[in-house]
Image 1 (tube, helix red, strand yellow):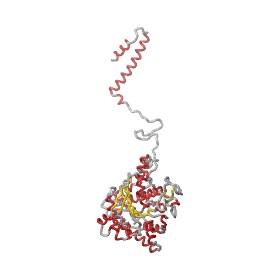
Image 2: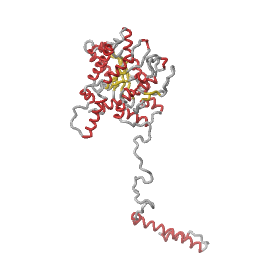
Image 3: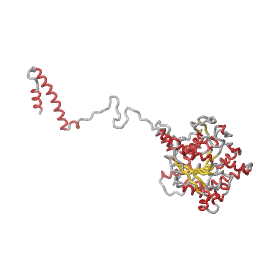
Image 4: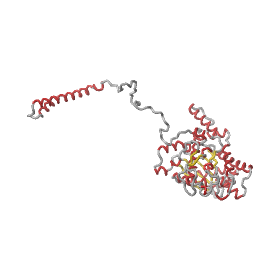
Length: 456
């Protein structure tokens, strides 16, 4: 084949080319063909695969590991859980519980702009607890923020991890128009629709024991409305209660079973959720002061306040007995001026804080956490259970927890002129937004510690 190639090349040379030029051309072609033949021979005999491997080590770098996937020129960096990403979950549930993030201390802190301007909406305001509670910005999970492109991967990951104790749960708020802003404006801010249901007085009379319809004030039945928070599937439902201690539905122990059953009937009528409440908030001291003022019987003695405290404890115990795993919270109230009803909010708040220091019996606390009566288990599971049991004995053993909204409002008389309220009672949207954010972070820790870690 090579001879033919040479012959063809020689024939292609011009006839009048000098003899020396032809000879030079032939020599070059022979050299090229010889190199080509050598390459063909090496491939056909597999010589290239048998060639010894040469070391890639450079002079003076003896002992260097040149295996694939091993860093040679770059340093081995220490593992950083956050990898420089912000926000990032940098605390554990146990650390936050130890700091007080699931109790009243989380409601003590400062606002980004400490003095609100009356008549001006300060939507950029945000409450910052004094403690490092790793607070998640719950509003980043709203559909509104997602549509605006403001929800980053880091924000979503932090919020979902920090608020995991709220996932697939139900929060029942038994409150007033102040609390109703949580579902009325909160659901709108999350960008999700509300669902409402009304159980009529006649329906209550048929479904409840004789006289059970009197467990609900107003004579117009039982109304509820709420929504499901996106990504967490947390259902938030509010129902009205005209006070915590002043009216018969709240202060008559005999009516509490019917009252609880009525709430269950209304929840069952809603499409949002079909499970017992995981969290229950009781509130309404502003209505108590209104009711007492109309009756001209404001509590004005230590004995009267003691009776109010016993009424609230009775309700909390009824709830904990009916729904053992529910976390109960009592909401304080700042000094409202609406209606001129007056009232010693400081005394009432002190009473609610005292209720939050009461403890369940050891047996009730273990039943609430679901950590008693375990079967033989693996060592790892046993260690986790014992750690959860310690949490149950501390935070989860409380009769109730304090939702200390009063401490967030830095005003003694919170009139509309103070800048904290619209009308002397109802807070501005920026206040409500931060209030909801702090409460949800508090509830997430309680849910994780008292329900998830302690679950069987």
